[in-house]
Length: 399
Length: 173
Image 1: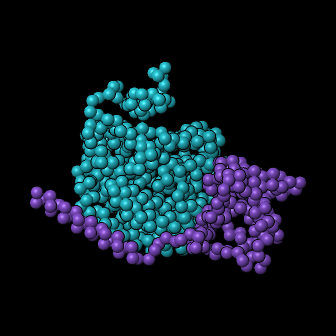
Image 2: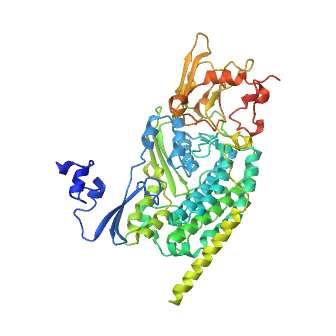
Image 3: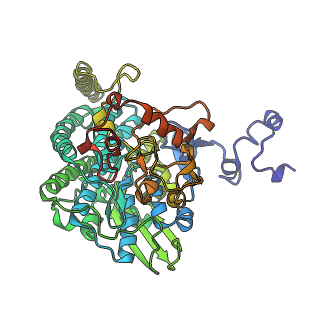
């Protein structure tokens, strides 16, 4: 009977034969049989140094990771299925909840795919408002990653500073989205609220403020010898590995490949702004750290250009789709650059009340996939540094 | 050996640099607010989308503009609204289950008469789940009974344009 007993563990049997029945199905079947000198360590899903509810099974040889494997699905919420049972409008609030750190990019991917399919034109002011919101949101996402990453490595203070900046960004974005976390201001054919004078004033105050703070970040964290020794040379990820696993975003750029959806396949008004694509000087964890910090500055300069270029005018197209709007039959595809990489939405509609299929491509899933290879043979503490440098958001990975 | 000592000195120095930055910011003014004694400024709350509420009527503030057309009930992705029609067009009961609400604004944007709006309640706390089922008609009566002078009305130009500042519409001039 014990052979088919997969989930349930009899406490008495563990007491009688210590070690034989410990763990669950995954950890008991990770190795075919026990290997002398090796232990199986379960990192997560509630481990403080993993992100969210990610679970990583590690086979340790001493302190070295011989093999590890991420176990997913603890935060699976059927977002793709929900897209099939709700009208496109009713699916909009879901998009803010897939990736809670960069919700506006997900909004843009889905709304953009629907607009492509239906052939809707967005007024220019709405396009610029989308760009400003998306870039500020990217800054907020990178700031939170910065704080959480340094906290993974043992430095607690920086996350408090990061949150101070993030709250200021939330104050700004709240004016156009109405919420502070699961933002969703994109509508088919525009945005739901216009930015007022206070919105633009706060952004103009915020940009020089954050530039000053970034200098402080450099002194506090980037130049810190202890941090650099934890990161330099740890977890090199080259372009070849990125291509094999489909990793995008700052990881690919740190590897040296200047790929950015905003410039390769411009959407919205990204072809009207001028910005460099930062690539990392090195492809290790420290390179990925530097690329994200440079990206914050890049986003700030994009927002600055947008403030000069934003025209007056309507923020919604005329005869904008209502809640009961049906997508025309056909399929469309939209890719946008999120804070973690390329976000893609493939939308198939048969002309009915709800879409036939909504495929969401989360960059975090591909980025996490390469972790098993990158972490092999490193010390466990370095594996945590690699995991942190991938910038994972588990709701997005599990969807 | 010498290298190891030098590395330690360098590590200690960068630790001191970090500590001096932390110390400098420790002495700077506090950014956070102490909630029960201080609250967030109305200016910031004006654009916050709290639980929805019925807007006050044009003639009688206690009268809702709702015509029980059920458009919001159909639009809601969370199925959290229930409107019961009375003898006339006006609803007999207007229940709103806030525990299922995702604050997307589908009901507000779809309402043909502008009978719904977002409130700015950020401090809504209940002890049980049942208390989150809000009776919006009773809430409207309660808000209409309060004298307009005592209401903290957010300035009109701060509210987002799609959420009309109906708070001031129903007030006697």
